[in-house]
Image (tube, rainbow, N blue to C red; front, side):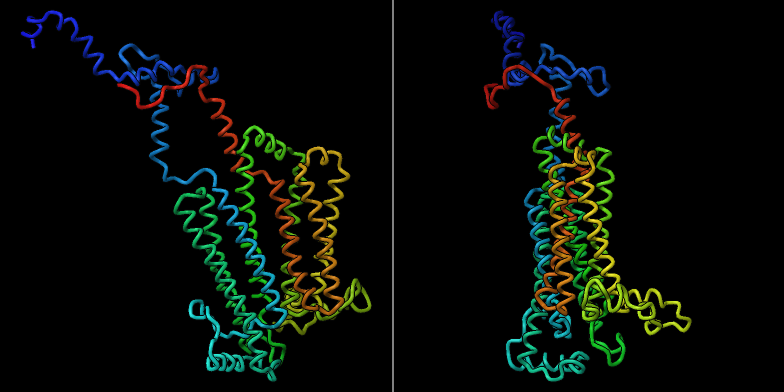
Length: 489
């Protein structure tokens, strides 16, 4: 190499210049020339902020390296759950909630037609298909004839009549399986492909477990009506009112989880579409003047739920078939005290259980409890509506969507009260009774929706705050855009 330099002296002068030209990435230098960081004043002087001007030898600034590191890290960690669940997940949850709404109403029809005890076995897999031959139908009918319900109530039932109640119960069970499968399979898909946030994935797994528990609870309920030792000898064969109410309550909880989380995802997307507008909405919801209203809505959710559960006790005891008048019950507003707290329902020698057993097992007191809870619910909704109209402070801060939600709750509670009274007065006809049960879930849904419009979304609030802070801390540059990648090196 030295001999070459002695032979051609000009080569010795050009070598450093050529090496620098051939072995330096000009594209990177072009990028450097366009990068001029002008951070906000709030970040200047902070420990996390360091800026180094690119020197002539081509070293990148530390800020550029940190930005490159963040982008590389985000690409490397693409397997992580997103901050916000996909909108498709919200629509799927709301669709599942609608399916649960339907099966609750159909379950009420199954109860009203006394079809729930027609299938005396629980076969989650092999019981998915109904009998298809005469021999299979005879086998199922023989099993039913051995049940207390057939012996005491339906001893004259024919095979054709049995098929009607069998198909009612079979449809209810198949619908339950469809709810489970249509939830479980998409849940695995959405969680596996990271379409949901990490907290939402945990909630979805919990809902799936609740659906499975609901199926087991349903058979546990039916089983209570197939044994003589679970009700008084010679009495009307029926499922346990405790198990029926537990089955209904679990369905309400499952429905609530689907509805609330679906609405939460859609609401989060709406708040993040425009973070400035979303931040303004959240600030309004955090106004201390809305605290009383928000707590009132939460209390109303509990009240409506308790009223619906008391309706489950009424259905389990057939308590709607007595005192078919309103507002009186016999000669007064309430039956005699001796009837409400009868020693007949006590099981202990010292009568220590007379109070709670009458509250849960005495049809007269159970109906009175349901009337009191229903009247309290109606009064509470009316008071909440009056509060939104008569309070000048609340009228200023209450969002328009919440005001509309209150009107919806008022409409549903009026409809539900009318259906309840008509169902009682007309001796529980099938259409009115079914509509009354559907009305209870509709009223509950309207209160849940009202709550979703007034509740402060903590996770969405945090995400909005993070995006606002990242927007303000992002470097602002008025320079030319970066050159296209793939240029000459």
